[in-house]
Image (cartoon, rainbow, N blue to C red; front, side, top):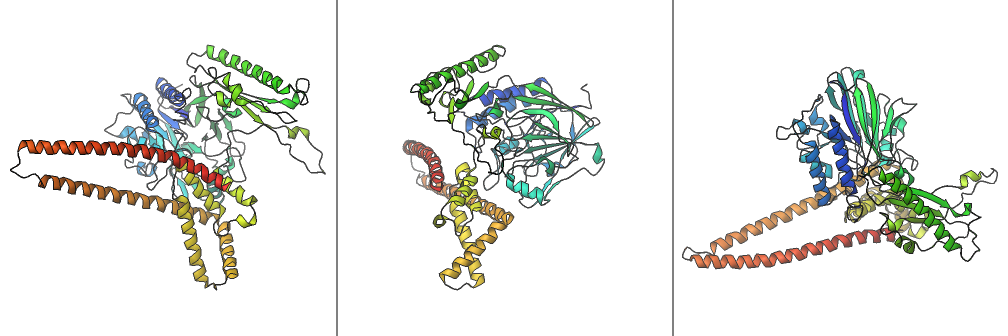
Length: 603
């Protein structure tokens, strides 16, 4: 029973506002579903909303995306309904990165009815000289409470927000997205600490929000559940898009994990086809209950796999008409999925009309794919994703060792879409397989990968140059300190030793790379400020000269004519500025093309 001692919390993660915002069919999907989530919070009269990261899809969201987000938060989260809980912890610690270090509903200038608490994800993480992200804009506007930030790469102390409603007390912990390998290493080295209340620590319901890889993508490219402290009661796990919102108990640590998943389909993989939900969490004392709420405005997504070799009675690779037979078979499958989607939509009028359809075809065994473009033309007005409705792939069988019996069950697998390789992984793989003559002899793959990712993902054009310059200067200092003879062989040997020592000390290298990128941000910020000061000074000088040129004896007509002249000049300048804006837009597109070129150059 809901009473004065029960917290009601609406939980959602990975909303990805702005995903495919320029798509004529799917462009508004994220905004519509975000409004549904906030509407559910309002209807259920929740105490607050808890978001698990990736509210925005892009690190630098467009003006349309930010405007739509502000509009929705103002519409649903502001009002006269009083907030029923209080904060007991030191808010200057909880929100120490904010210029307004207190929760928004306690601001006397704002009228908040539903507070929103959110950590950042890997898509909307802080960057730049001032380490700001899109959530900080919402926080400064008083519409959201951004918590869980950590700037240190040496030690993380997670201090909880302590909440109390009646006799129920919640310790809300949050940790925004951090590169998985770095956080994994910090957990192993005991550099992550979760602080607990000094008084009655066993009387608190401990709720932890995290945004990291939960499933294993590599040796250290995830966070094992057993790394987390066992005093936690519930973990809300963001970043993973498959909806597993029903709390599942970890048998080793004994805490429960809820994985809400995303509220929009961002990759055409089986995990995204699971029905999307948000959660309504009830907490009273140390007890909890999670109520699943199905999202009705999410575009339906159906995916199916076909292995052509599994149908020898239908397809013979030696048949000259086999391609036409395969195409007819695929059309039949797509039609069945469309019928299923239409039946689902009949019971839900809020669901978008056009579904997302994906048919993955394994054509191994001597078959040839047909024209995907021609096939897509038949469904241009029936599906939301006609260009990628069909995906052909050829499965590669894994070779087993000779002394072990082959397990043919292991030879059949499905493609793992949606798990795109990261830039630093591509760089590392390239140099691991490259010939000796193109191997790096001075720089390390780790540092180069980090710099290339900054260049590609966040359009930081000086990142690679600054890193190369920094590592070159550091190597030169090392050689001078060692008093190395000016013989090419000895220099090469010392450089090789120095490089190997840096590769082994990954923690120090990570710290150095982050320092270089941060210093680059700060230098650019100072340069921009200096340019602004020069422009302001020049503008002031120009205005003062104009005023001095008007003598007391000049009549009104003279002043007016001078004004008209300046207006015409400014109009011409304005046109010039517009052309400059267009040029900057073209440069923006060129920068993205350049990023693609860098990747192609490395690979």
